Image (tube, rainbow, N blue to C red; front, side):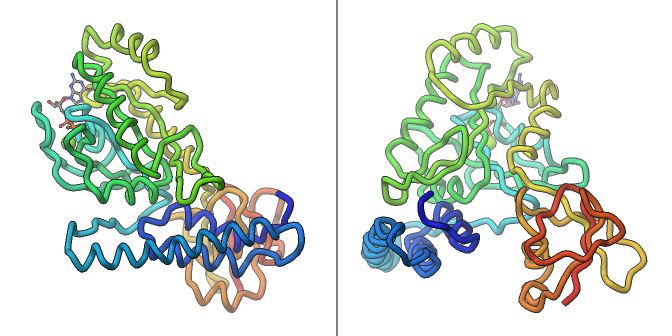
Length: 332
Ligand SMILES: Nc1nc2c(ncn2[C@@H]2O[C@H](COP(=O)(O)OP(=O)(O)O)[C@@H](O)[C@H]2O)c(=O)[nH]1
Ligand SMILES: [Mg+2]
């Protein structure tokens, strides 16, 4: 990119991509505008941002009016763990069964559609890290809950489940994609923000054909490949019998692209190896400090790191990039 964008700008841009409301969009656009380097090379970006800010302001007004007319209560689920994965699909695809297979949550699983009426989170373990999964009501021609867009944008990854146990499974999967095409929230191989279109946000998606244990599943999977052009990484499973479930578990964790870091208190002899902190790959000890406590980042002096490329608690500055399984001791 022409303009030298700061880490603060990039973080705000990522938050903007995930914004579930116009209010949030406006907040992050304003941070992006504040953070963008003001020079010739970034003039076009600056004026684009100004346009987006004024559009967002109008949208905020619209939202206020809608709220005053009291339409639907919003649904927001506090983020937990190393990242959030939302389970999507048509009716009976096995979304709830998959949540039950990957977590200790106990959603209602039933052989009839529309059992799941509200989003239900559960925590999925991967080694010593945990990922938040969210089971959701189906998306169909008749049903597309208004809060779903916000949940999808806010998620780090989405699973699009396909019911290989029914002749309607492929069409129902296509229907989910069609409904999303009517909105500014879409699925793609990677998460990104379409800079050319205001608010058009893509969430990374894994395709999960389910019920491979059934005899007709193989033929239906071949049909899915033939008739639906999908560019997602694919993990076929049987949520009921466990086939492919561990591969999917690992793929979900890996898709977050985070590293685990263990913290050690300056006075403690040993680090806390029980529960890692997680930050995006490429992030720094300062980002780790922020995760632990806001004050720790504000008052950061230096850190000692044990791990990749550093030995014996080498002192490092805030911009030192952390690696998976590093031990970090922060001094403030
Ligand atoms: N044979 C088979 N049936 C499954 C599998 N996963 C889910 N089911 C069944 O499909 C039906 C719908 O499952 P459910 O999880 O409630 O679907 P949801 O509507 O997408 O949440 C239930 O009867 C499940 O027992 C699977 O892997 N194999
Ligand atoms: Mg369900």
